[in-house]
Length: 197
Ligand code: GRF
Image 1 (cartoon, rainbow, N blue to C red):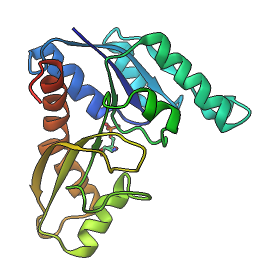
Image 2 (cartoon, rainbow, N blue to C red):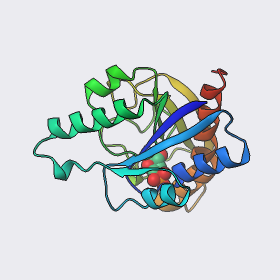
Image 3 (tube, helix red, strand yellow):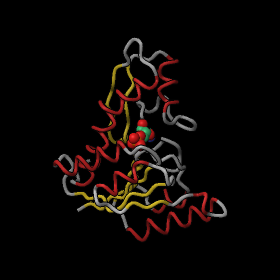
Image 4 (cartoon, rainbow, N blue to C red):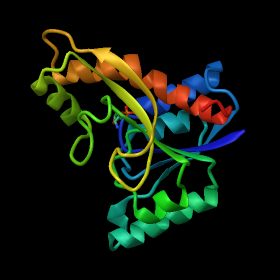
């Protein structure tokens, strides 16, 4: 059984997709051990609690500096001993100590077809704003391993999504989530849990 820890910062719809997929068998041989947020107000924490999963918040605001926060975060992960760490809308840049300690065991979902619209500054709606500004006809989502860079690690899965006339960043974000993110993130976890990568 793959022990998964999910890191979140916001609404947690990707977390929900993971929990639902474990529930209905689309993810086999994995369980979510804990959900950790950097943001106490993240609705993702409620979703975890509703599913009976330990929901923790480690907020940088409660530490005197970034190093102390990083140490506490890493200590909590070490205590949980996850086989896989899933960044599901986690907006904190991971410290080098963490990417090194868990090399090959951290995956992220990014709402574009990497290498388009990714890297520093491309998160949330900004990704979709940039895609619409450039006028691409196809965008999508990518699941990738996390290394020391931003969105630079090996790609696991991608799924394309059409851009439609009249799209706003919000409409496009919703379509990318529904058609791509909520599909390929659970799929990637299932593949890792069952040695199908
Ligand atoms: C998603 O668009 C994800 O790709 C991005 O942040 C958003 C998180 O949404 N990294 P949610 O918290 O899973 O609802």
